[in-house]
Structures are given as structure tokens and as C-alpha cells.
Length: 159
Image (cartoon, rainbow, N blue to C red; front, side):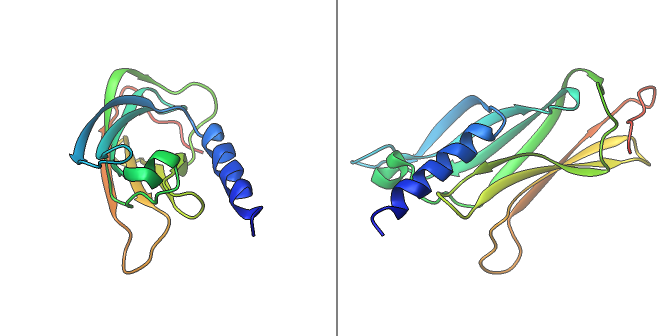
């Protein structure tokens, strides 16, 4: 049992290092904690790795306190997403899947991930982004959706 915690910490660290890098945009403290960091809402930016000119902004709760400071706290599964065109949109490389995971991030030590899925709406030439947590305890998972329309002069290449 005493070997379980170090193994879990190493597994969590390895999974975080494999995730795409988020650029921290800012944070707001929501609850003061005397010991450890405060509870907060963080906003991170993720550039779509397969679509140049699109950035997704994800806001989520981050648990503070002693457990949060040590990386042992389980963050809430609630998140919001807004993806925007931030430059000319282009599709380098292979055609996009009709639906694929753009990125994921662990929000608890072992069990829960925040995921962002990119979908292609061919009829409207639009990229649709969905964020949700993959751990459902009761009912439907919290989710948020956003869309980035692409100029019809630039058709989205889809497999």
C-alpha cells in the first residue's frame, strides 16, 4: 500500500507531460484558503494542433487548499469553452477526422479527464468543439459547446 501513492503520482505526472501545452491566460480566486492556494477559476488557451488560426479558451474550477497545492485534489467536472478564429484558418497536413479528440487534461489524480472534441459540420463548413468530463457519477456529464465558422472559400478537408 505504501508504494501505491508514489506510483499514482508518477502516472499522473507522466500523463500531464504528454498533454498539449496550455497557455495560461488568467485566474480568479473564488474561495480564500488559509493553508495552501485559494480555490480559483482558471482560463487557459489551447491552439488547435491541426487547424492553424483557431484557439480554444477553456475555463474551469481549480481546487485549492493543501490537497490542491499538492496536486491531490479532484477538480470539479464543470468547464466552459469558447473557440475563436485568431488568424487565417488553414489546414496543414492530413484531412481532419469527422470527429476527434483535440486534447485532454487530467483534473484528478487518477480517474477524471477534461476532454475537448473537434467535430466537423460539413453542411455549414463549421468546426464544432465540445468539452466534457469523462467521469460521470450521476446523470449526464457537464458539457459546453462552441463553433467556429470557416469561410466557404476554404473548404474543410475531411476524411
